[in-house]
Length: 417
Image (cartoon, rainbow, N blue to C red):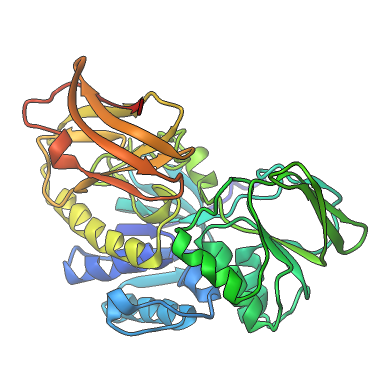
């Protein structure tokens, strides 16, 4: 049997993922004139998640215009393409090799792409039913918010008429908007935690839409043979509840889209599920960077767009840095189970230009206490915090990483008395 042949190509920067952060990164790299920039997108069209979101608001921060998701996705694509970035859709990256070499499957066959730098921008996905530990039957009509939006805005299909929304993050409210687009009124919104995961100011939206809310639920169970028939659970008072419904929308609890990463040589952070990076977004292999929601789930499109722009300057600076540059690396960890993750997980010193200006922390539960950063057995920084797990926590990196701090940094929590 003849050995399989690969076409070999090259570029300056390869971007894996043509969503918001990847396209913003590509456009800015072209403005910085770094060389040939190639965006690799496995879907038939670039644009990412906003392409499926046929509602407002997008684009206000980036383009000073109020846009729907598909218009915003097209704008990001057009800007990058008009500046000269090569956007290759229908192209799947199948392997990440050391040193910036990628294996691809393309409409024209197998390919090996050699890049001076690779930036991972694969984004996030919602947790599945199995990952949310939902019991019961396996009928038709159980989908994610992303799948609902694809059916609604791309295929114009109405999959059910009275769904239950499982989850209470911002994307869950997006699901309500998508249901309204289809002429559907959700039967209820249910949440396992004692409070909704969005800010409380959004709760009146449920009242306005007349969507019942149940928090603190236990033992969620789906009932149905062919189609979903009901959703059963115990409420916060321990009472059995049954809601007649023909669909379940499993929303939120985002996880990085990291299957490709986990099969690679790159170090993966257990807390985020994404790559271990320093403040420039550089991975454990210095030819690889990462930006956007693969770093930590999950931020808004505007946040990811700006992060893509910022990362372009970091990659451009790295391309101009001497190959002999070998920074000292400080490890950043956490030792309290209430802390889910910290980003970045490494700090390169001396501090390079254009690096992240903040540490980002995620929580596993509601926290009230004092967050401490410790190095060399001493507390080098502390701050009182009171936060829900879904909230973005960010703290100035410059307040924690001092010129005289050469020891690894550990974040810990001191509970309020």
